[in-house]
Length: 225
Length: 255
Image (cartoon, rainbow over all chains, first blue to last red; front, side, top):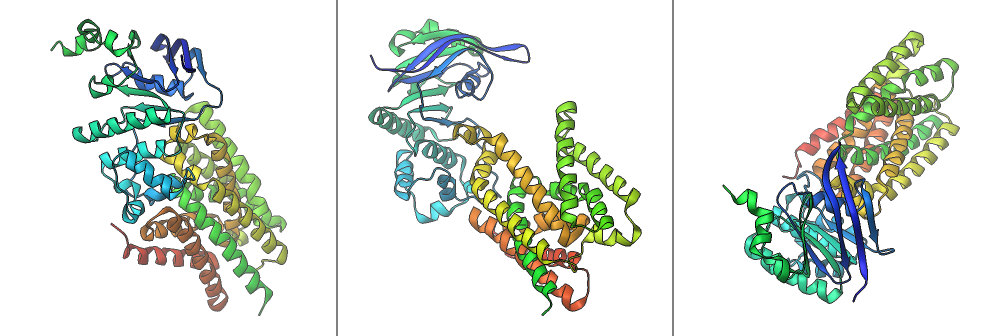
């Protein structure tokens, strides 16, 4: 059994007296891909932020010591007017041009001098998402948390990128927490699935937990039009 | 050549440069008018300095520290928008200053006077400008990252609150230095206008921040030299040159 990277026990998060997350318990192991599913407003993004130490909580969140974390947030907007080039965006991380070019390869972008000189704010939403994923991956974090990372990327692109990322994560032995509001491609390659709607709905291996009954637990109310 | 020429030009280079550089960060953080407001907050200290005959920058600095502290405290207590609180503090400062500012010193307080600058003032300006520039250069990219996404910055171990405080202190120092050249009324322009012009011309961040620095220097030096030649007040000349550069930059604006 591989090492535990993250241990979460009896996690509770409240916003102004309202419970947003209730009594969550799960863990993440080395090289594991954990997909978090749930309807809109289920607290998925809150969970990621809490795990990253950005929100107050009650309970236990224990990361492996000195672990290097990466985060792809759901919202990432860059003003068109900000004179920040793609290259300068990567210079925050003090990485070489070779590393930048490799990171862009992972997300399916062949970079040119011209692309690197472009203003970050002038990229299309799909390109910006890919750039952000490349930015987070470029210094090879041990664990990466992704919040709906494929939003804005076209369907065909999503599958190709997802496939190549999974391959890369496995090769590099990175642990992944991947938040998605829809079931699909992502679940097939997950090691474990955690479904939540404020509290845990189900948690386990995809083969075991992806059942019609369980899916109704997530989408039952929203699908009953 | 009179030493005052040299002193004032050197002060113009150092203060104009660092004010422009700082301005590029302030515009990005949508805090352009803070420099303007703080220029006014400093006025009681400037008035005291003029009455008792010491360097206006030394009068301005404690006033700015107090002003920033008050705005910060009021914000914690009231949760009113920062700009409203800044408005209250800066108008109060102006009102207090005009209770005791002698009429003969009004123009110096409002639009500055660099003709009496001495060697000590010059050295202090160079050293403080250089220190602030080096600090800003060190925190610049982290501040821009925090401005793009505070969450990403925190995860990359940027201590956002600490950097914000350092940044505010830098603003206070630059405003107190700049008041010597442009006075309370025009100080805001020294941080806003060069950076705005540079933003029109720049294609990336380093062109933007260093462009603002260079335009700040050009405006200050040209304004100060014109002051010695034409005996018009230096502060307004500096600002008008910066505004002229801004107008020219509009013609080159990248779309």
